Image (cartoon, rainbow, N blue to C red; front, side, top):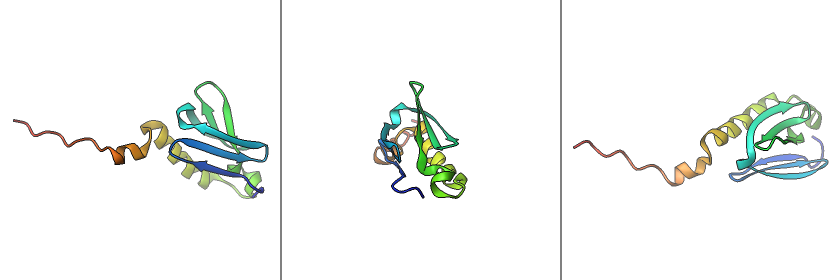
Length: 99
């Protein structure tokens, strides 16, 4: 892999460490995720695209389809359901029985 590149998915932020710089992107700004020629692409609500070079074939020397699929599942869950830890910490109360 290209030295020093990585992708971190935290509950609040996506951290992309690329050869050209580091980006911290809040999940609240992400509208979609795709795989581009240079790695995973995070599309924002304001029309910008950020690339995570760590998931490019060139950075690792091997195909990244499986790693991208794993990352995309996490991202789609985050985008569809918000913060998955919130639900675990604050579960909904059970439904009340009918009188």
